[in-house]
Length: 121
Image 1 (spheres, rainbow, N blue to C red):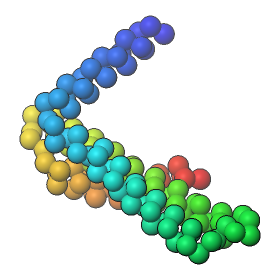
Image 2 (image 1 turned 180 degrees about the horizontal axis):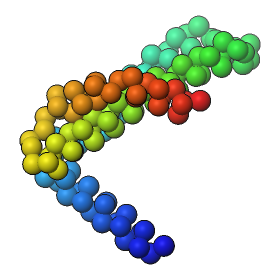
Image 3 (image 1 turned 90 degrees about the vertical axis):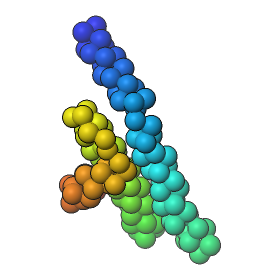
C-alpha cells in the first residue's frame, strides 16, 4: 500500500513540475471554472426567473437537472482533456498553446459527450 502512495506522490510532483514549467497550462482550469459559471448562469437565471420549481419537483425539473449536469460535466471533461492534451505535448518536448489543448479535446468531442452522459447519470 505504501508503494501505491509513493507512486501517487511521484505523479503529483511530476504534474506540479509540468505546470511550473508552462504557466499557460494553468489557464485551462481557470477557463474551465469560468465556463462552468456560465453554464450555471444559463440554467439558473431562467429557472429562477420562470419560477420553474415554485410548484415542486416534476419530471420537467428532473430533465432540466439532467441537462444541467450533462452540460456541466461536458464542459469540465472538455477542459480536462484539453489540459491533458497540452500536458502530453509538453511531456513530449513540445511547446503547447491553448489552441493545441483545445484541438486535442475537440478531436474527442464524441467520447467526451458520451462520458459526460454517463457521469451525469
